[in-house]
Length: 146
Image 1 (cartoon, one colour):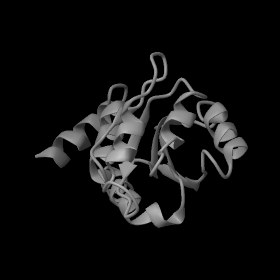
Image 2 (cartoon, one colour):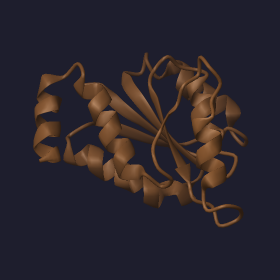
Image 3 (cartoon, rainbow, N blue to C red):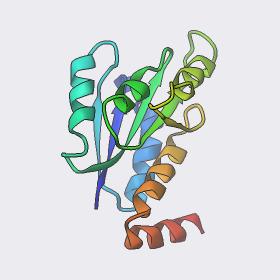
């Protein structure tokens, strides 16, 4: 089974990403979690994205707040599906800035975007993506949904 890459801009995003990890764990989907920033560690973020397919990932969940460039930076460097989680920030607009940054990607660099702080839905969407080619996962996903 392909695994899910989970990338967050900082460790302060972990409580929301925990919801995605719990969902993936419940569905028995392997995942790896990393902290990369589109601004502070752009080379590492790019390297992760460029090598994700070769490293057996099936999709990537990326979460960031404020300017929220992480999901787009990851998507620009891979052909894998990328799911963006815009994170609520206390500094500006309760996450609307991150939502707009995540959802408004230019043509050719799509990012599937869930709700602000939507960790659980990101995990479910990742499972649905992987289940398109995995009948056993599809059965687990159907049971989970019921």
